[in-house]
Image (cartoon, rainbow, N blue to C red; front, side):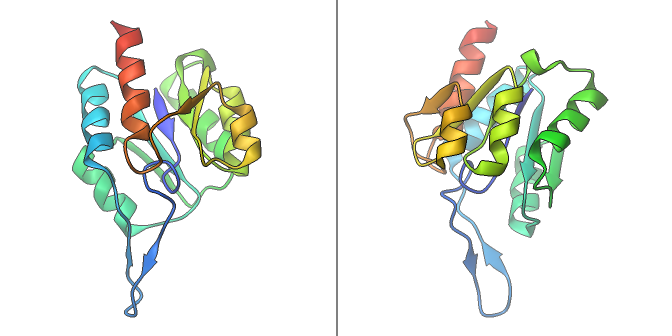
Amino acid sequence: MFAMDVDGILTDGTVTLHSDGTEGKTFSVLDGMGLGRCRDAGIVLAWISGRTSGATEIRAGELKIPHVIQGRTDKLVALKELAGQLGLPAREICYMGDDDIDAPALQWAGIGATVSTAMPAAGAAADYVAQRPAGRGAVREVCDHILAASR
């Protein structure tokens, strides 16, 4: 399974709030292509976000992400619950996150990945730091590594 945070991983961490109360986020098509390739290769995909967002739900639907967990700041608990439901041990999970609340999940997963702009706790917990920026191909980079390793 490849599970990840949303804001600061799939996006650059920016949330645009409009005067009517709606929000906007920018997602990379590079990341979307990588996630689609992982999905097509049989890799389970999951998004675990501390925020609840309609934009996240829409993008997850477009990419056919089967497991979208929103409004959960207890990332490790959420990840362990999902892994238990799917019968997956930690060693078969890659988790990608960028903030303090992601650090325990990064440590628990078989592989923890982050971005260069991660908060120090997440950076210290990660096994791999993507070269590409958050929201601009960092997830694609990790997808490519996962796919290469699974061949």
